[in-house]
Length: 252
Image (tube, one colour):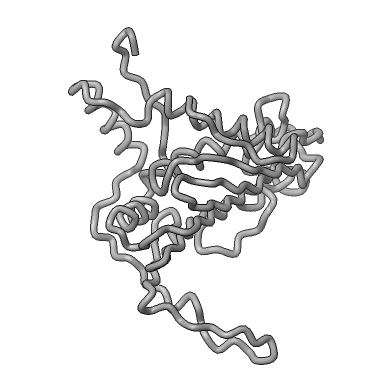
């Protein structure tokens, strides 16, 4: 900053069409008072013995900087901060569900890093975010990640590209009765948002924003300070998992 050098970090998830639609809903007041956020991310990464793994082996070795908390919590920080509200506290549980994997040469190795993390984040304004990240889950979702926001006036579920909504005026009234078969198709009771914009490649769009800030001298939101906040949340998540307790997220 003192040298006048413009700096930035990648915040690619914010430029996904699904999250851009979700952000528009937040800004329009669609949700009323936001109550909670649920993020479900992950897929099955093969162990590497009978099928090659689709992620590099270092991802699963803590000594090489691997682990899903270090990988994903920085993303969750900027998504929550920019789309919903700033993160105020974190409680995380980390697991290594698959203790042995096989590397690119077919050699077995000890998987010492966490391959799943279960986090609860308290956000400014009392919003609670429950975020599950896993490389040891099989997908029963429309996309590899979903973001569900529930508010007093409506809810939305966004993925990488799509976003579905349900307003309180169209919310069904289910009754718990396990003795009768379910006759409602609950997913059919949501409305898909239209593509009212042209969604270019997210990395390209962010590059254009950064270069514009360089040329014009305008402030750039996704700078190294923002990157440090992402690393801070990952470090606090690891500490929370080790100590088994909730931790405040102090200002940097």
